[in-house]
Structure formats: C-alpha cells, structure tokens
Length: 481
Image 1 (cartoon, helix red, strand yellow):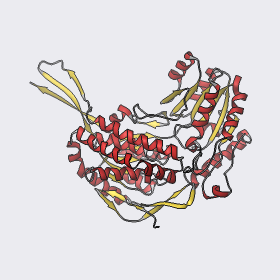
Image 2: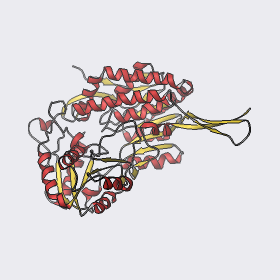
Image 3: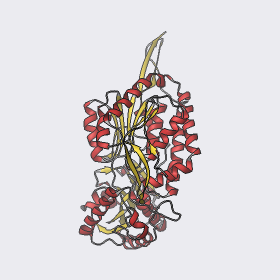
Image 4: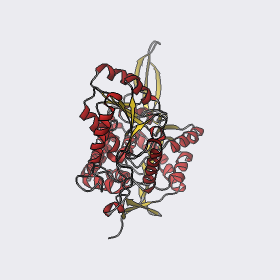
C-alpha cells in the first residue's frame, strides 16, 4: 500500500510539491504519511492569499462565520476515531489521551462558533449632549499561527477557532514532528466550505518558515506555542515590525504536597501530572515539593506507583505512557537523566531507554523518579519535557512556596492539601498563570483563559473569552445626533 501524501493548502487548493516523512515514534518502521515541505515563497503566497480573502471574510456576519465553525466541528466529530488514531500514530500519546484531545478540539470549535453571536463591543454614555458612543470589535487582519507537536490538534484548534470567529484570515505552520492532526483540521475547514484564502497551511522547516512568517508583510499578528528559545527570537524579530504577538513557552511546574493532604489522591495526582502524555506537556509537573513530615512515605509511594505504569505503543490497550515524540526529544530526556545522576544520585526507579522486543522500534524512556533534589540542581531548574520527576523536601508551607516560586517560569502549579487557609494563601501567592488544588497541574479546559507568567508567556491569554482580546481590536465610534 502506498504511503499517503498530505499536501500543503494555499488559497483554497491542495499544493503538491516536495515532502517530508512523518514517522510513528512507537514504531519507526511505519511512515504515517508524507507531508508538504513548504518554502519561504509558499508562506508569502499563503499570506498574500489570506490578505486577498480578508475583506470578504471580515465583512461576513459573526453568526455566519460561526455556522462554518459548527460545520468544522461536525466534520471532526464524524472522523473522530480516525483523527484520534492518527494522533497516536504520529505523536505517540495513548489512544485514550488522543481521543480526549480530539474531543476537546471539537468542543473548542463549537464554543467559539457560539461567540459569533455574542461578539460584544463596549457601550457607554457620553458626557456630551446628544452624542452616542460605542466601541465595536474588528479583526486584526492576517494572523500567523505556529503550533507545537505535543497537543497537535487542541492547540491548532484553540488558535484557529478564535482567529476565524473574529474575522481574521490565517497562515498556519504546524510542528514537523506531528503535522497530521493539524492537517485534519484544515481538511475539515475545506470540506466545511470555508472560502478560499481564509485558511492556509504550510508545513516544513521551522527555521525557514518561522522567519518567513515573521517577515511576510500581510501578517499583522503571530500566535506561537513552543520553546523559549524560538519564542524569544520571535519576540525580538516580530517587535521590529510592531506585530501583535502571543507567546506560550516553557514551564517548570511545581506541585506542593502538604502533610495534611489526602495522601492517596496526592500520589495519584503527581504521577498523573508528571508521566501521562510521557511528560510532554507544558503544564506537566516536573518538581514535586513535599513537606518533610511525609517526605519519605510519599517518595516510597510514588516510586511504587510509578513502577506499575505500563510503557508501550499507545494504540495498545492498557498502556499508560507512550514514546518520546522523536529521537531528538528522547536524547534530550536521557541527557537530563544523566545530569540528574551526577547531581542527585541514581534515580529510585527508571532512568534508562527501554530496549528489547517492540521497544527497539521506538523512542521509549522509563518513567524516572529522583529524590533528594535541591533547588540549585539543573533538574530542578530547567525544563526537561519528558517522564522525569524531581522530588524536593520542604520544611513547611512557607518554605514550599519559596521553592515553588523560585523559578524563572510561571505556567502552572498545584497544591495538595485539606487546609482551607493554606489553599487561599497558595492561590494568592503562587507565581503561575494556571493554578490547581487537589488536581494534577496539567489538565485545562477551553472555557477560561490559559497562559503563564514570568518567562513562560508573553502577550494576551489564550482560550475562553480572553482569546478574543488577542484576535480582535476595538474601533471606537462617536455620533452626534
């Protein structure tokens, strides 16, 4: 059977050309597909097409645009099983996790479809006699969307849906490690009848295409999710053109476990947040800060629970953890594990690449737990983005908060406690954009704003009503009557 080809999409047409391979990280002998390898010239063509489509699309009523977003959601819903399997095969996460993400993508399109009928502006009384004044929303223009591989459907959805409902046109560049999930969304846009030029999709080299997006004159805003290194580069270069930018970058997320916590729940929440999705979540827990009174007991329980996790091909039933997304990411995780060995000693469980049998086909790393970690260690400061837990000891709640806030990152954080006062002290004192209590640090919904603080994020928040603030601007009107 021939390998399927998934071409780029520019100005309402599928564009044939050079391709690159998309391989299954759980079984590298499987080529999931060949994807269009675009050029800087393709980005310029896509941006020009988006600019040409902008006047008609932005003039369409919000409810009419919303109707098309509902159609996109319905198409994704009909293809739910296929898209979920595609995601597991290209990114490696387990099939249940993939299904949860695809369901979330569908719900995001439906949520923002409804915003088309609620696109409220601002109305206020004038100080002047017989003057009526108000502010209405208008689109920003052509928007560049640069999306990552770890949530290859949900993040494209939560960028694309609000961009479209606000009347913008789009050029999307997906991550090369997992482009098919985003491609399926573009396919749904095409099948739903989104007018040509409104949505454009160009895959390929991040360096080449990222620079082309920043430099394409029609583009007025860029939303990016990815590494701090690339995000900081975009900030520098896009600022030269005064582009509107939204950056979601790294995290080194803490979970604080107090002695009064529901012990079993705390253990499960920490294991879930650290290891599920192979730890490849920007909101994953990578630092567990435990009050000293229960430290030894907690470490023992976490190690015991971690040893029960099943690693393997995410298409198989009963698998908890899939592979790293590619060889480069696996090598990064293994390099940090070696750093951890030198800093904190041998991990209490894990610490190796899994080999033998089917493991030899993919990029599998054992779930790894380090104890006796201190705040100055590299594994307590730098983002690893893999299945590695570093456990620190805190004298008390105040010391735990000090450790938790002692990071350049501030994306997500979690507290495990039954003390109501401590809960509110944490909520108001933790330096993070997303906080949870008695839940994993990872796991967000689309109805509320998402984003971090400090070096984790820059610009307006994503998701929920906050997304409209990035993808729209205000036009203020004064009328004398």
